[in-house]
Amino acid sequence: MEPLHHADLPPGVRARFVSGVNGLTMHVLEAGFETPGRPCLLLLHGFPEIAYSWRKIMAPLAAAGFHVVAPDQRGYGRTTGWDPAYDGDLASFRMMNLARDAMGLVWALGHRSVAAVIGHDFGSPVAAWCALLRPDVFRSVALMSGPFAGPPALPFGTDAAPATPPSPDIHAGLAALERPRKHYQWYYSTPEADRDMREAPQGVHAFLRAYFHVKSADWPDNRPHELQGWTAEELAKMPTYYVMDRDRTMPETVAPEMPDAAGIGACRWLTERELAVYTREYERVGFQGGLQWYRCRTDPRFGADLQLFAGRTIDVPAIYIAGASDWGIFQTPGALERMQRDACTRMRGCHLIEGAGHWVQQEQPGQVTELLLGFLREQPIANPAR
Image (cartoon, rainbow, N blue to C red; front, side, top):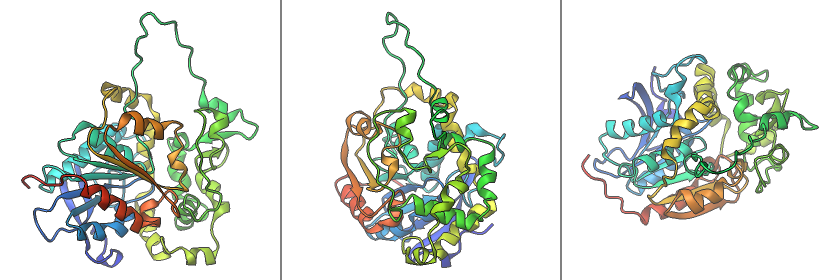
């Protein structure tokens, strides 16, 4: 397999492979690689994205003096060495191992530390865990879309306390609504989800177009607001791409919102040529690699492992950036507040960008770049020996 062709990349960005990274051969995009000794920025994408989702901000960040690196993460794109089977090595996709992938790549590139680890969507918790576990390596952190509420808690002070009644079954509650629903993360954890999307009746390209559209600021019904709690009634207030109709697949969910030809032509933040890059990658490898991340999130075994870090905080400088039209800000009720109040002890700002939905670094790359550079200028970015 060849790296992504230079014709698909902006000037100043190259693609190549880095081998021997925690069992992976990682496909990475790079900018600012010409001059050795630059401080590094590590950019971690989410779902259904690839390193290419960072293309619009890489060269501007490099122009400010950074070595900017964006990998296709485990399970995605042209990175190889991961198990693609639903019943395969699920544990390799657990959060601790994803953070190990990130650190392995940094060191394989010859950096002892990075000036910042920057994560979007599911890349946001990976970036957060990197900063929490190895602040000596990941000197600051930028979280996009997904707030980080901290490690899962351990029950405390229960010795003499009365027994706590079990929490209501949220899935039974969603299914029992007058309009029966299901949560997208648990749908993504089913054996059928990859096939549903890979064999979407409208084709992968049209499915991705509708999916990117409906989660962007271009979709007028994205008007996110705070939810009052983790209850079926509150969660059902979110759009169906988060809390789905019980009997619909994701391609069926987003199909009614497919933009027309004029809408597609007017979408300058994701042209048809750019979307075709995503389409080729997902037609080739499918979605299961990314869906394994959701399975680790919904499997209580992996959350229990992270309880070892209960009470730990992110103590490096942190910033949060999201689109003002992004429901991801509120999909976990209370997470945004816990991130600012408890999880990050050196929070430098929370910014909601108008004119952007979930894909903030693609929809409004100029504003994202400006916020990141302002944040980075405040931090000591000296990079020790390469």
